[in-house]
Image 1 (spheres, helix red, strand yellow):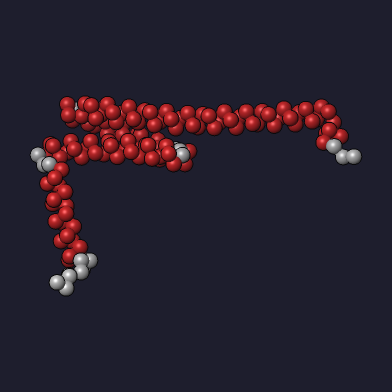
Image 2 (tube, rainbow, N blue to C red):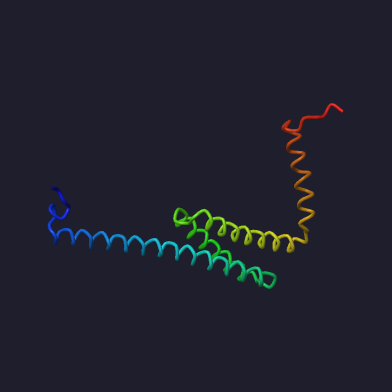
Length: 142
C-alpha cells in the first residue's frame, strides 16, 4: 500500500508538516499586518480630518499649506496601497477624503463671501444654459 510516510519517511513527513505550519503562520501574520496597516491609515486620516474640521476657521495661510501637504501625503499613500484595502475600507477612506474636500470648499466659499446656496443656484442656471446650447434639453410641445 502507498502512503505519504512511506514516500517521505517519518522525518521527511515531519519536515513537510513543519514547513506547512510555518507557511500558514507567515500567511496569517502577513494578513494581520496588512489589515492593521489599513486600519492605521484609516484612523490617521480620520484624526487628520477631524482636527482640520475643528480648527480650520482659525488656520493661517501657513496652516493651510501644511494641511494640504499632509493631505497630499495621505492621497499618495492611499494610491500606493489602494489594492490592499477592502471595499469597506475604501468607502470609509473615501468618505473622509470627501469630508476634507467639503471643508476646503466651505473655507473657500466663506473667504470669498459666497454662500453654498448661491453656488448651487448659479451652477443650476449654468448647467441649464449649457445643456440648452448643445441641444440636450428637448423643448416640450405644450
